[in-house]
Image (cartoon, rainbow, N blue to C red):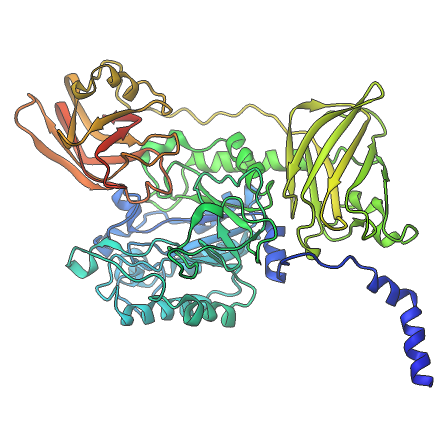
Length: 633
């Protein structure tokens, strides 16, 4: 009897009632490591291999290790630049598709141990790790599953070596916040000199679920695993850094042809948006390079993203519930270009000055309903305490509710940040924000998929006293924050740079006739098409002999991949009759990152005509499309 009374007393105690009265979690929930990742918001990814010294976007795997010898490598300069941009982590690309390892691995001789850098005694992954920690950044690693150098690629022996490489990285570089795995697997490569195409069964070859990812889970239980489909964070489906306007943290991954969804074999139709009530909590990581390409190219020094462009990416990645992963590309000497450093610092200042002053402070809040009305645990005041996990909630039967906000005085703002307590799931379907003007409530803005952080940029600043937020949800909402901010504005310009770009105003392409103008109009939104049935090449007439050292090709920018080349050959001529091959190769990452593709000739050549030959297109199209050609002295 005494035991029964004790149980009854416990059930009636305030602490027990409070625990019982928490809103029931809704749908898929984030893990502890995912919560920490959401709190990070931003980090950088460093691409630096022999590919940098070849001025290529993807290495073929044939570069001599002796090529890798940076004269002024400074991991601290790179990490400090990232930290100045308010980034919270740094990922070292320990091995890209070229197969060159930045640490002295025991699995292959194709590594820094065979390079002249640090007399073969260096460990660049370790240098990046130490520099990251000194700059206050978390550290992670990227390990390409595809290896265009290793002659074993495609065999079980290579798959075992890949897992051995992963084990080395998981055990030798302290606590990692992520283990990053690309979806690119199989294709043309050097493969020990065989120079052939190799295809693997991506559904079985790597044994991701059975043998590979368990290595990370065992050795680095707090590390987020990235791939196309997670399991911890997913690719957003593009390399622009933008999540969709509606982007759920929950998703039900879809495989191809009835197979399980795995890296490189996924239906990407729902990667940008996720799924409302998806089976798993796998938020979107929005990856984007600071320059047009992931690797350094000298012609892109003037094309570094500005602080305002980075801020837009932040609003459309972190501000849509995802993470922002910015690619940084050191120069061959081993440091970031001054334009990259300057932009990162100004971006950090913009973030700090924008979000350091919450213009809702001091406001009076009134909720249409509060859970356990007298229980302060769910009070509407929690929306102002800058705590992601304290929250206001309604009674279970109140799913649609309203919060009214009265500011102490008129304050101009143009950004609204709303957060849910995601420990209880992504509960809210949408919100609508209204402003009171002269006693009338008027529509101001709306948003869907709130989640960890939703930042709404208003069409124009607002400066009224009273606002209200209407909340629509299938269950009682658990809202943790409503904030108002004003975007910080400051003029920005890169230091003057000499341009070696050729004036193309008089260039023509005879095969295109009148369409030729759209290829030289400095407008990437316009493009021209050529029928490949008649000829596989087009000729650029410079109208006079000029010294040319490089050409860049910009694919169409309308979202279509039709007519996009993946392999090319460029030849030059002084008279239009005798031709010499100047360059050939591949646009390896053009599907995911359809930006300007730089082709270096290795030297300056005097030509009047350039011939661009299409060797292969993405979809084996019968036509070739081009938005812009640019030439360089």
